[in-house]
Image (tube, rainbow, N blue to C red; front, side):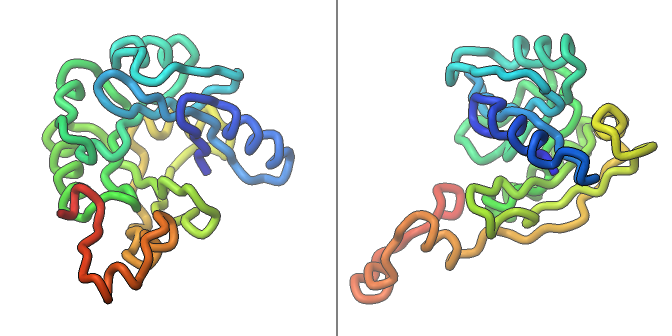
Length: 195
């Protein structure tokens, strides 16, 4: 299970510590808000903090390379700007399924990954416990050690195993939208990519 918080490695390191010797493989990392969109760096085992939109993708790829981390582009089409940088810098994987992203944008991400020869992974993008496991990536690694799992992602020994999208009812609960506003007042709600 990869654990990545926005702009800090704290959550992943806490997960790694909590897992201890349980046999559960935790991949600590961070979701960095770069100048050109979000970037995941998996395999970071040091406490690090990042300022949002301060780093460019090139700098993040360089950082990941210096510590043996894996670079993944999450939800590449969720923002208004397409991820053109995947043609400029080498990323290790692209999120072909993100549970919080519209199906058509996930399909677009898969097509981009295929066209560029980039492995695809799935992500739950969980912000609550109930969302964990909505996106599952199968990884074929020599064993369950972190380094072997990271190397398997780099080599593309990965497949998307589960795609369970974040449904409207969950969005209503998460975002605090009142059902009365939807029904009584006829207001239209949705994520930006759905409208």
